[in-house]
Image 1 (tube, rainbow, N blue to C red):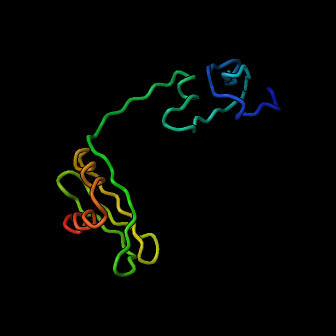
Image 2: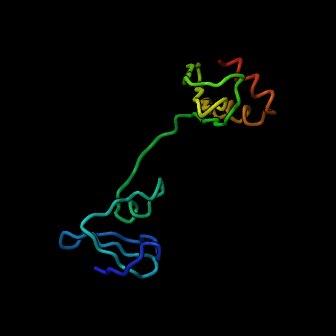
Image 3: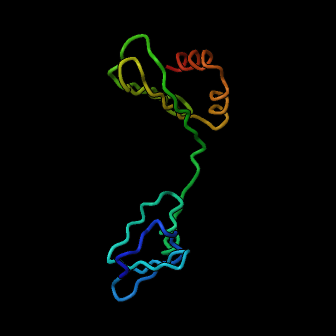
Length: 128
């Protein structure tokens, strides 16, 4: 054990088990050992990859358009509408500000993201 090791000194380059301890070799040459390693470093986890733990996934062919909008009145209720290509949700933040999460096809998401603000609001109102 290296009590002075700082995890910010390097990134995980390799991982192995030795005598019931995890051994993490860092890309800067440092070595960390521990009884427990938590790979909580994101979707492209270097710790997970170094330990040889694989992942799998698939593309749902959806994208999310996320933004905040001001409403005419304060909103205290979450709303969701299920559309043919995915749901659109209005989630209250505070006062008259709400978060929009609109799941849709990649093409439609790109179209929505390219709209001027007023046209986006009109499309949102039409969808709701």
